[in-house]
Length: 194
Image (cartoon, rainbow, N blue to C red; front, side):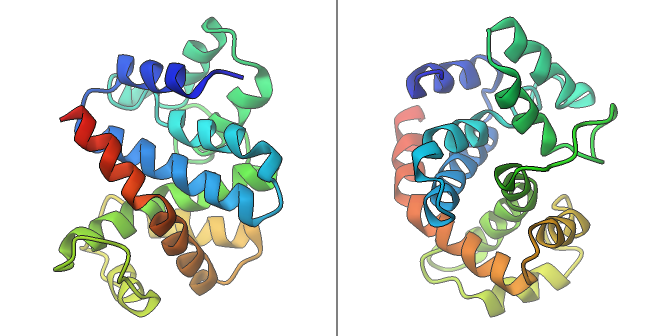
C-alpha cells in the first residue's frame, strides 16, 4: 500500500488545478468516512487512497480518463484490486468500458464522486461557503435544478444510490456528513498548496 504522502505527490504530478486537488481531497475524506461508518475501518486507508487517486488522469488525459490511470498505476506497481477500484468509478461513463462496481467500496465511490461535486458547488453558494450548515432539503433543491452544477450527473448519483440499495435522501445525508467530517482537513491541505 502506497504511503499517503507518496499518493499525494503522485496526484500532484498529474494534477495542478486547485479544483481537481480539492475534489481529490474531498473524495479521499468522504471514502475514509464511509469505510469507518460501514464497518471497513481496517481498510480506511485503502478506501481513502482510492478516493484520492480516482481522477489521477483526468486533468492531463480527459479523453482517456480511467484508462490512462490504470496504465499509470500498473507502471507504478499498484495491485490489481486497487486499480480495479479506481477504474470502477468510470463505469458507463468513460470511453473504454470500465469495470462495474461490485464491492461496496466501489459502489460508494461511484455514488459519491459526482455527488461530492454537487454538494461542493452548493456549499460555495451558501453564505457560510461550508457544508457544516447544509441540510438535505437545500441539496434536494439544487439536485432538481438541472442547470445548477450541470456537469454533475444526476443519473450517475441515482444509479449509485440504486447500486447501494439506499434511498437518495439517505445518500445525500450520509455524503453531507462525510464531507463535514473532512472539510477542515481539505481546507487546511489546500491552504498549504496556495
